[in-house]
Image (cartoon, rainbow, N blue to C red; front, side, top):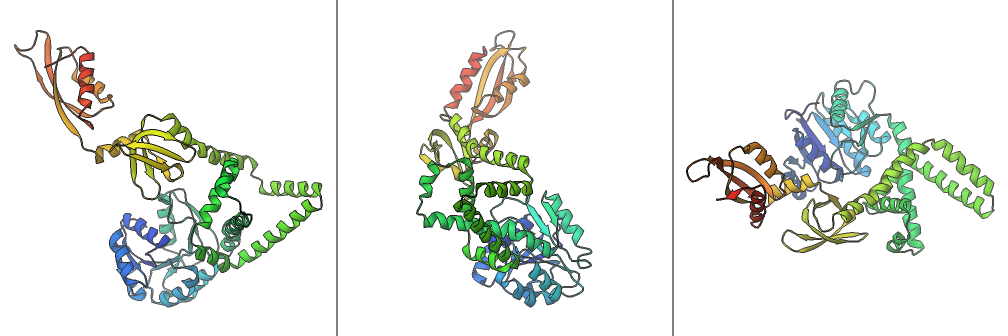
Length: 443
């Protein structure tokens, strides 16, 4: 599947969440995108904002589609497929992106015409990720129902550096009952327990080990999402009910071992679980990296106090550039380029590299142009001088405007006129001081 505007893709339910993210991504990659929704007003608004087509008629929207992607809430997926899929054009590809695969896959197989292809799919990420690079995407193809489209989709995803997993709908749902269902349920249960114990989360972070901080961040990430979606995930995958049941039974059994002082049995059970996981070294390596990342930003900011630094807000994408005034464990305070004090939550920002900060300033700040003529020995090499000037922090761009030798210039010397730009008028003094420092005479 190449990025070709001749490929028409309709996303059923593409105005919110993952559907909207997919629409934006595919549109940026050059495909002709149409999105649909039940709310015409909001649908047209979203379509205009991201630059795609809109239709409030699902059947009409797929008439010219080469690929049809179903991205509606889990509880509406089967019904939507049954209503729309029978009208899919010949040789088109039908996909769904829900987190449950068995029932949607059966629906696609049942309702999609025989002269179409189907490829149930599960992107293992949400709409907050910047790209599919490094993200897992699970494909669950049916034999003889995705002959021509499978390789195109697979190679497109691999070209995007996605991690593609091939599975069956049944294997997917059984595995996801742990990967997704059990994980979500455990975190939601821990959050509920903390609430019932009336523990101040903010206060608990003062006592926190790195492992607790990581766990709390993941719990907060889960419970702050759409609770209706997470309820649907628990209910829609039948395998998840089995996983929940076993989790509750194991919690009760392990608690009983502790209550009855059965230390050896508890130790043996925990050791057996460690052997089954069989990823001790890899898990330590990954968790060490995650833990070190908690302090990395703090260390970078601390070492930059008194210096200029750039920050990007993770969600608004707004850039803040300024001198770091102070910091604590949670926030950094800067004096921005307008001399205003701004305090940012460290957890919500990305630190820009010096190169990224510089490029942002070039694009967004006013630049001041200056000419300066300096008399130097005629053996002076202009290219070497330009290289030296380019290493002055205050100089943005510099070029040689003129070279002059004449009776006004001392014998054995020449006058070189440089044109340069800076972000601040006062930086002109820095450049002139530099010229005097290398033995030049400013005309």
